[in-house]
Image (tube, rainbow, N blue to C red):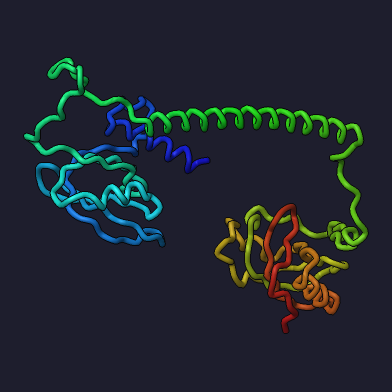
Length: 307
């Protein structure tokens, strides 16, 4: 229907050539112009063959191309009858920097004799200045009115359907609320298995220094205590601070006994778990860690025993 509406709009604007008063809300892309025919040319636009009508102003220099699709048989027939230098009036639509010709009308040369008045018609001011509206334009107006009526009917039907859908949505929400749907669902067995074990705080470990909060980097130290997925490290040295670290004073960790926890359930965490199981109290380790929350550091990478 979008194509039909555009054609109907073009038909309305074509009334300027007939001439008919242009509607106040006509598409601004539709333009009329009086010019002089130069020649025809073959062009290919958007993968389709077109005919370009080359025109120039009635007075002055410059040229422009008005495109005609091969499917516009009536317009093609009209432009093929034109002669070089013939004055014409054109109606065209500007779309994506291209001018698509909708109608062309030959004009009389300056100084040509006016048409003879019809029988019984007085010449001069009593003669109508404009011809009657052609049947084709009246048909286009009727077609546009019909299309607008169909569009209004479709919009009304869509509004009714939307109202029904909203009412059904509200009913389903009430029904689900009565059945308790929306509460936290029961976890499946495989989700329970993947749940990270609860971590208990290490006894005797120091609270995380304020200067180490937001830390991202590498440390070296000695294992003081260890549990299933955590250990306490007496920090000897900060070997590297990563670029994304936000700790204002990483050196505050040196000499402190800090708690380190392994990360979640993934391949890297499983490798860290194997390293932790093989460690003994008193072993020296290197570890890359990040402070995510609380008073613990989370093992991220580079977790290994060193000599």
